[in-house]
Length: 170
Image 1 (cartoon, rainbow, N blue to C red):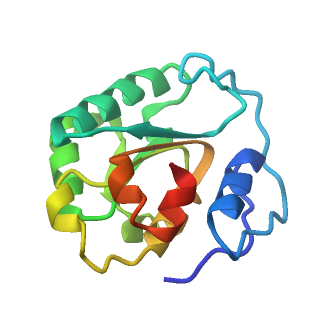
Image 2: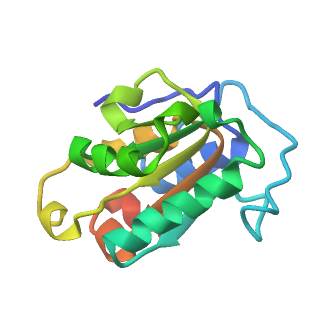
């Protein structure tokens, strides 16, 4: 996977977060700013990257759904995407999201070239199978860089801490 070096789509704080997570940061060629009031989603509305720690797959699905409900107040459903590292995980989440809403749920590779105002990143539902696998760690960089206005990362902190860039995210 090729790392993005210039980002024309994301809010400045998202680009800053990516820069803080990776040793080879993105250079923002053009800053995207908006005036969204995110107080309905986070107590720190200037922070456009949110991490939510969860411990079980059921809790992760619940948290994703809760954030979808919050996001619907700010964005149209077609402006929301959910990214996962594995196709089987995307299928599980899609079963819980009404297809008619237009929310794209897919693996990060299928989001190449796609952007959404809000991106929810589901790190994993099956933690035991993922831990120890040699998953390309660049997926997190690409997933975050799909967002224009808001990134919500949902996952187990202990899993993310195993990834070099994940430790900086948690």
